[in-house]
Image (cartoon, rainbow, N blue to C red):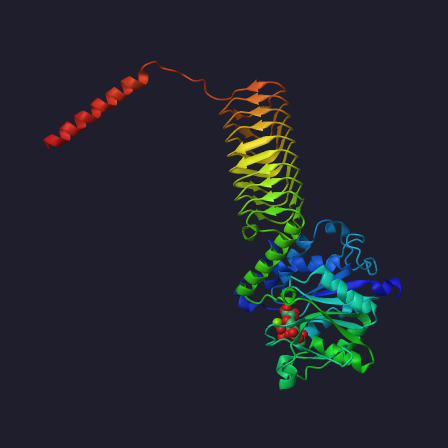
Length: 488
Ligand code: UD1
Ligand code: MG
């Protein structure tokens, strides 16, 4: 095959109303692993090497369209506004090699079936010189390996490749009808099937890989003469066979094909996703003391010999170096942690946090958009936001960076080996120099030079004997009151 014919475009169907979710949020934006379901599908398309990605939206499409640019996996934003200018750029199986595609949006205003939905992408892709992979915004668990098997089947010469599975309960799924040679002859929807066809356990996941020109050509010939009165994507198989093209089935485990229609399905998808991610970490040499209590994201990068105690939640965008220890009840998102650091228990690391090697972040500490230097300690009850903390600095208990003046955020800089006394309020913008100190309870509003001590609190006044005299006076006062009350 010529290089061009290996180019891939993805069409992601996301036009369903999702009414069974009973939600104001469009179905494909409901999260799995802390990210909208459709983000998983976009990542899959990218990983498969898609040079173009077309999302078909309908109900709630404005909101989906608005959110799509935020859902680009890391690095994708660089591909800028050249939507659709990259056909052929994404060779097969080269994730990250080509500039990743920006999703393009097309509308399906009327829900007339899966074939009709895919056909909405024809104006953008009918002349695409490669393959089209049809995916679903509400089916987030398909693995890249599975798509690669489909691409292998395409390369073996099948014009249409359908992803199938053996269903525990075939129910309403379309059934895959194969010929004696094992190739796919047609797909029959359950409601159009004979009793004999319904007895086939091999079901259609809906995921299809086909030569683009053939796919859109076939779609334009289909009608809605069936039980649902819809244009079925599935009908392209028989239509391709009628033209002498060959079609094949690639199988995957049923769990991958789980589509989300209800909140119960969403919970099932989350459980399956987490189970998969936990298994992968255990295999990669990460200790999960109680795996079922640890929650991970699609892109969590966690090195070997990290120990994760029970009840830790890791959101999107987290990278953790070797030997890090995460204590219980910590929550991390959008942060990087250097080797050997310890975090928590009860730590909250928010986006933009970078913890250097060997640093210690203790209990009830919140860090946001801040760098904590190598070997620095923030051990108790602190908020560090919009700040940099130098190496080996010690941040005393109860230290607060006052980063927000009600309108703007300001930065706090703390130099290497500085010592911030307990309960210091650092009113940003402010800088504490290298090896400088602040006295406990200080409200620091001015920069502290390197090596200096700043004390910014009222001086202590001590009155000898005062406490005893005061208590005696108060005791006598109470006795008089009680006596007066007794006389009434
Ligand atoms: C479809 C397949 C069936 C397969 C099943 C797997 C067809 C005709 N049937 O059936 O063989 O076993 O999926 O789950 O393809 N969609 C749109 N616009 C439409 C119609 C559908 O965007 O006009 C989207 C839906 O939002 C959904 C997906 O396509 O995400 C599948 O549609 P759905 O109606 O659920 O198809 P099924 O009847 O389940
Ligand atoms: Mg369905």
